[in-house]
Image (cartoon, rainbow, N blue to C red; front, top):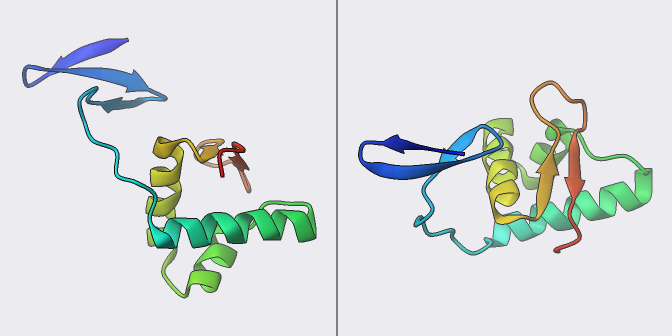
Length: 95
């Protein structure tokens, strides 16, 4: 589905409207570190890490982890279950 937004065509992707011509930045060093942590945590404990665990590992705030997860989801490295889903992230196998 799409809608016009200020004259631009926007495509709906999981409730978020994105521009089909927008440039998606390559994966960053911090995002690679986060993916590696998630993968190792899942391998060791058989569950996905909490946001607090990820924030403590990267020595940052939970709000930045939210941004990185959203970015990784846009880039296709993670799937997020949605708001209110406990430990609701999954690796896509792209990493």
